[in-house]
Amino acid sequence: MVFNMTAADIINLYIIASGTGVCALSIMQIKKSPIREDVRKYFIAFLTLIIGYITIHFARELLEGHPGEFITHAIKAVTFMEFLMAGFMAVMLLVMILYTAMPEQKKMKVSMRAILVLLILHIIINFISMFSDMYYYFDSNNVYHRSTLYLLTNIPPMLMMVQGIYMMVHYRDQFPKHVRRAYWIYILAPLAALILQAIFSQIQFIMVATVGAAVNMFGVVVVDLLKKYEKQQMEASRIDNELSMATRIQADMLPNIFPAFPEREEFDIYASMTPAKEVGGDFYDFFLIDEDHLGIVMADVSGKGVPAALFMMASKILVQNYAVMNKDPKAALEAANEQICRGNHEEMFVTVWLGILDIATGVLTAANAGHEYPILKKPDGRFELYKDKHGFVVGGMEGVRYKDYEVQLEKGSILFLYTDGVAEATNAENELFGTDRLLDALNSAENDTPENVLERVSKAVDEFVKEAPQFDDLTMLCIRYIGKE
Image (tube, rainbow, N blue to C red):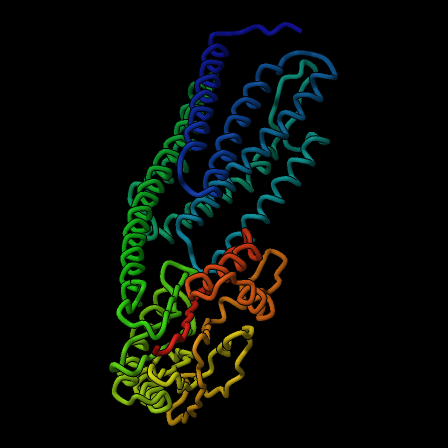
């Protein structure tokens, strides 16, 4: 088989080579761009379709005019693929218009359903054309001729373009001006090329128009997306900086200098808080009410993130203030609950364990507002859950009453407080760390300093969870009562 290249064929070959090269370079560029993965895949598929379309179109023209049954079948197959790709290119344009416009969900579904119906109709018509001469045929010399019904093969793509024009007009306010202009060029440029091709039938102006308009649309849309991406990155960086600052502010709100009371030899205290997000809702607190009384708080706010952190700060201040004023856990929790309930429009709440230790006698007076059981270790004993009576959460309902209880801390006693993030730490197998493992970790401590106790628990949780993500804040406090000599 010999191909006789005319001047027009050489020009068309140059057009196809240039178009393929431009599309290939565009694909290489889009692969390196930082825009969303689904948009990257879309443009790679779109530009690949264009490469296939113009290559197959030119291949059909080269095959025309050469006799042989094999050539006839090859031309029919190539023609089917050419028409099919034209339909898919129209679909890709409509999808991009919808993606950019982002109409409401119901309108999106209706538009996509219409697009799919037209695409299926296009496939059916062109499949029929392979086995009949209704739309086009080849003479004895394998020269391509259009039948009287030829226009039927292009009706679905034409209807798609009409749908595209409708969407462009209907959603015109949804597009930036430069993006809207790029879409119009892609829709109208091939039509203008068809007029030129009617005059200069041998030169494939339609290929130049298709490639040029497609690459222009690709460049405009991608640049627009990159600008949005850069803006989002700047906004994300600003948010990260603010969250980082919020993390430092929250950390500074909690007592974090140890030893906390170096001049007091009657007790040793240590605490830590590891938020699941940049900021958390857990908090601990300890403060001297007077020379003989130490306030101790362990609390867990409902929710996570910034809202929980803001609620945490307000709750911490209220609980501490009322504890200092009343010197009574029950009264302090009731006063804090009333104050929080008054302005709690978001209906958040906080579980609180509040204790006041008489430093001289070791008597610990405490009240529990829906928090975890404290864990107590007596001298020469083991860590065990102290199942105190729970009251209702703070902020859940007005008029709640709480009850005090007393625990006598002997010299050498250790009290361990924590939030549910410790017991509910979860590994990759979705197993909970649980209170049994927590007690085992506590009882495995080699010495009884509060810092060592917390380190042993933290290590045990880390070894259990391993690479699984942290879903809740981990907050712990440990106090060892030494008493006066």
